[in-house]
Image: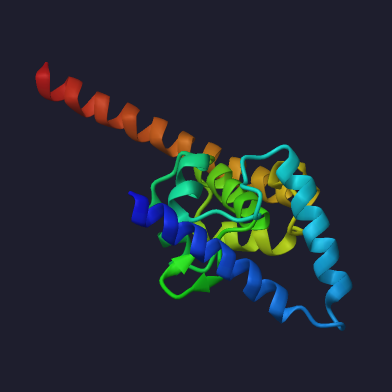
Length: 166
Protein backbone atom coordinates (compact mmCIF):
# COMPACT_ATOMS: atom_id res chain seq x y z
CA UNK A 1 0.00 0.00 0.00
CA UNK A 2 2.86 2.37 0.85
CA UNK A 3 4.50 1.47 -2.45
CA UNK A 4 1.31 2.31 -4.37
CA UNK A 5 0.93 5.66 -2.60
CA UNK A 6 4.57 6.57 -3.32
CA UNK A 7 4.23 5.45 -6.92
CA UNK A 8 1.06 7.49 -7.29
CA UNK A 9 2.79 10.62 -5.95
CA UNK A 10 5.75 10.09 -8.29
CA UNK A 11 3.50 9.65 -11.32
CA UNK A 12 1.51 12.75 -10.41
CA UNK A 13 4.73 14.76 -10.08
CA UNK A 14 6.09 13.37 -13.35
CA UNK A 15 2.82 14.16 -15.09
CA UNK A 16 2.89 17.74 -13.87
CA UNK A 17 6.52 18.21 -14.88
CA UNK A 18 5.80 16.64 -18.27
CA UNK A 19 2.88 19.01 -18.81
CA UNK A 20 5.06 21.99 -17.84
CA UNK A 21 7.93 20.93 -20.11
CA UNK A 22 5.59 20.63 -23.10
CA UNK A 23 4.27 24.12 -22.64
CA UNK A 24 5.42 26.35 -25.50
CA UNK A 25 4.91 30.02 -26.12
CA UNK A 26 2.57 29.24 -29.04
CA UNK A 27 0.08 27.33 -26.92
CA UNK A 28 0.73 28.96 -23.53
CA UNK A 29 -2.49 31.00 -23.53
CA UNK A 30 -4.56 28.01 -24.64
CA UNK A 31 -3.08 25.90 -21.85
CA UNK A 32 -3.62 28.71 -19.33
CA UNK A 33 -7.30 28.78 -20.32
CA UNK A 34 -7.47 25.01 -19.98
CA UNK A 35 -5.90 25.19 -16.51
CA UNK A 36 -8.35 27.92 -15.52
CA UNK A 37 -11.26 25.78 -16.78
CA UNK A 38 -9.89 22.79 -14.91
CA UNK A 39 -9.55 24.82 -11.72
CA UNK A 40 -13.10 26.12 -12.06
CA UNK A 41 -14.34 22.59 -12.61
CA UNK A 42 -12.29 21.29 -9.69
CA UNK A 43 -13.74 23.75 -7.24
CA UNK A 44 -17.04 21.87 -7.31
CA UNK A 45 -15.74 18.42 -8.14
CA UNK A 46 -13.84 15.60 -6.54
CA UNK A 47 -10.68 16.02 -8.63
CA UNK A 48 -7.43 16.17 -6.68
CA UNK A 49 -5.29 19.32 -6.54
CA UNK A 50 -3.08 18.24 -9.45
CA UNK A 51 -6.11 18.07 -11.74
CA UNK A 52 -6.27 14.45 -12.80
CA UNK A 53 -7.47 11.04 -11.68
CA UNK A 54 -6.31 7.50 -12.24
CA UNK A 55 -8.76 4.94 -13.59
CA UNK A 56 -9.61 3.52 -10.15
CA UNK A 57 -10.34 6.98 -8.78
CA UNK A 58 -12.48 7.80 -11.82
CA UNK A 59 -14.36 4.53 -11.45
CA UNK A 60 -15.18 5.37 -7.81
CA UNK A 61 -16.16 8.93 -8.68
CA UNK A 62 -18.57 7.79 -11.41
CA UNK A 63 -19.58 4.49 -9.75
CA UNK A 64 -18.44 2.67 -12.87
CA UNK A 65 -16.35 -0.45 -13.24
CA UNK A 66 -12.82 0.21 -14.59
CA UNK A 67 -13.48 -2.42 -17.28
CA UNK A 68 -16.36 -0.29 -18.54
CA UNK A 69 -14.09 2.75 -18.73
CA UNK A 70 -11.48 0.71 -20.64
CA UNK A 71 -14.22 -0.46 -23.03
CA UNK A 72 -15.16 3.15 -23.78
CA UNK A 73 -11.48 3.78 -24.49
CA UNK A 74 -11.28 0.81 -26.87
CA UNK A 75 -14.30 2.06 -28.83
CA UNK A 76 -12.67 5.52 -28.79
CA UNK A 77 -15.38 7.40 -26.91
CA UNK A 78 -12.77 8.67 -24.46
CA UNK A 79 -9.04 8.96 -24.95
CA UNK A 80 -7.13 10.00 -21.84
CA UNK A 81 -3.40 10.62 -22.00
CA UNK A 82 -1.24 7.64 -21.09
CA UNK A 83 1.96 7.74 -19.13
CA UNK A 84 3.50 4.31 -19.59
CA UNK A 85 0.93 1.88 -18.23
CA UNK A 86 -1.08 4.57 -16.48
CA UNK A 87 -4.01 6.58 -17.77
CA UNK A 88 -4.69 10.02 -16.34
CA UNK A 89 -8.13 11.56 -16.61
CA UNK A 90 -8.66 15.32 -16.66
CA UNK A 91 -11.85 17.17 -15.77
CA UNK A 92 -12.88 17.10 -19.45
CA UNK A 93 -12.54 13.29 -19.47
CA UNK A 94 -14.69 13.04 -16.34
CA UNK A 95 -17.37 15.22 -17.92
CA UNK A 96 -17.26 13.21 -21.16
CA UNK A 97 -17.54 9.90 -19.29
CA UNK A 98 -20.52 11.22 -17.32
CA UNK A 99 -22.17 12.18 -20.62
CA UNK A 100 -21.48 8.69 -22.01
CA UNK A 101 -22.92 7.03 -18.92
CA UNK A 102 -26.03 9.21 -19.09
CA UNK A 103 -26.61 8.28 -22.73
CA UNK A 104 -26.00 4.56 -22.07
CA UNK A 105 -28.55 4.62 -19.22
CA UNK A 106 -31.03 6.01 -21.73
CA UNK A 107 -30.28 3.07 -24.03
CA UNK A 108 -28.50 5.04 -26.73
CA UNK A 109 -26.26 2.82 -28.90
CA UNK A 110 -22.49 3.41 -28.97
CA UNK A 111 -22.49 4.64 -32.58
CA UNK A 112 -25.13 7.23 -31.81
CA UNK A 113 -23.29 8.29 -28.63
CA UNK A 114 -20.23 8.98 -30.77
CA UNK A 115 -22.31 11.19 -33.10
CA UNK A 116 -23.83 13.08 -30.19
CA UNK A 117 -20.50 13.63 -28.45
CA UNK A 118 -18.89 14.83 -31.68
CA UNK A 119 -21.52 17.61 -31.79
CA UNK A 120 -20.89 18.77 -28.23
CA UNK A 121 -18.31 21.20 -27.00
CA UNK A 122 -15.94 19.60 -24.44
CA UNK A 123 -17.50 21.46 -21.51
CA UNK A 124 -21.11 20.97 -22.65
CA UNK A 125 -23.54 18.75 -20.79
CA UNK A 126 -25.35 16.30 -23.06
CA UNK A 127 -28.78 17.08 -21.62
CA UNK A 128 -28.26 20.84 -22.03
CA UNK A 129 -27.47 20.66 -25.75
CA UNK A 130 -30.24 21.31 -28.27
CA UNK A 131 -28.50 19.13 -30.86
CA UNK A 132 -28.23 16.23 -28.43
CA UNK A 133 -31.84 16.68 -27.37
CA UNK A 134 -32.92 16.32 -31.01
CA UNK A 135 -31.03 13.03 -31.22
CA UNK A 136 -32.59 11.90 -27.95
CA UNK A 137 -36.09 12.69 -29.24
CA UNK A 138 -35.39 10.48 -32.27
CA UNK A 139 -34.16 7.78 -29.90
CA UNK A 140 -37.35 8.11 -27.85
CA UNK A 141 -39.46 7.68 -31.00
CA UNK A 142 -37.50 4.52 -31.81
CA UNK A 143 -38.06 3.19 -28.28
CA UNK A 144 -41.81 3.89 -28.52
CA UNK A 145 -41.96 1.98 -31.82
CA UNK A 146 -40.14 -0.95 -30.21
CA UNK A 147 -42.53 -0.80 -27.27
CA UNK A 148 -45.52 -1.05 -29.64
CA UNK A 149 -43.90 -4.03 -31.38
CA UNK A 150 -43.19 -5.72 -28.04
CA UNK A 151 -46.75 -5.17 -26.82
CA UNK A 152 -48.05 -6.75 -30.02
CA UNK A 153 -45.70 -9.72 -29.57
CA UNK A 154 -46.80 -10.12 -25.94
CA UNK A 155 -50.44 -10.08 -26.99
CA UNK A 156 -49.86 -12.69 -29.73
CA UNK A 157 -47.86 -14.91 -27.37
CA UNK A 158 -50.55 -14.68 -24.68
CA UNK A 159 -53.26 -15.54 -27.21
CA UNK A 160 -51.22 -18.52 -28.48
CA UNK A 161 -50.65 -19.78 -24.92
CA UNK A 162 -54.32 -19.34 -24.03
CA UNK A 163 -55.38 -21.38 -27.06
CA UNK A 164 -52.91 -24.16 -26.16
CA UNK A 165 -54.05 -24.33 -22.54
CA UNK A 166 -57.79 -24.31 -23.35
